[in-house]
Image 1 (tube, one colour):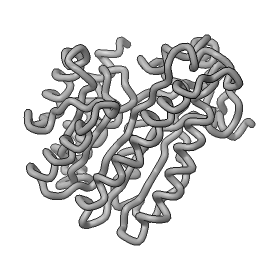
Image 2 (cartoon, one colour):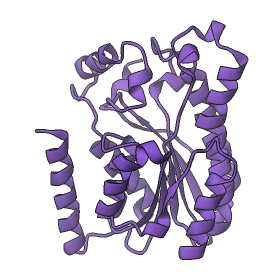
Image 3 (cartoon, rainbow, N blue to C red):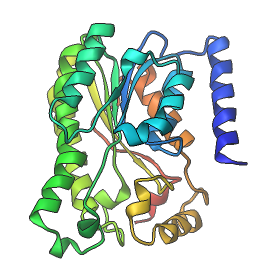
Image 4 (cartoon, helix red, strand yellow):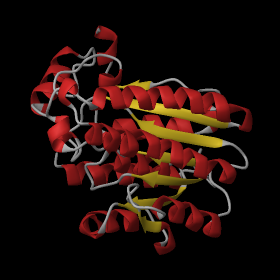
Length: 277
């Protein structure tokens, strides 16, 4: 089955759920940051959020990526006013997204951060040899932007809400060729715990998600990634690779009231690979 057929089948299933009234996110409003194309983990999450009834604001990185994401925004019935550019390295763009959401909705129920970046030369080299500039850029884009997002979301989450970010097993154990992104993702998971503790009294939950390896655009920058996927498929208890749809539905569940007391801990969606050590 092609990726397009898989996406079409999932959208059909989600439309059926909406028609049957199976909408635990009905009336909820959320932001999805980080969709690059229809292979993105953020796209799998966006489909699931929408299928469970949520209204969405989604962003695109720049004009080059717009041609890949605009049809996706249209498929999700995203209003033009809430389909917005957002490069977290550009001053004011993230603020503009939240200002648009405040103007359109006045409230926010969840926000997904699926953004990571490290310069190629630092990503492909040893952590020992990582440049100061590359490390700071990786931390800024992949970790601090999540803190920034949380700070902007807090005043809009008047009735509580959920913040999501995407991590990886390399945050916990050394994964060959993951290199500098390992320490960066470890920082992201630690950040999530602190945010959960600080924002919990306001009813705001913070949930880092750790998917198994998926062939996304971002993953293509990791050396020998195909070998990593083969190893995961062979060793994971499920003997299967995770899909963006698997990650999406697990994440969407955590946005519902069924998961209202789950916060601060990393949720693995990896077929059980992480339990093997």
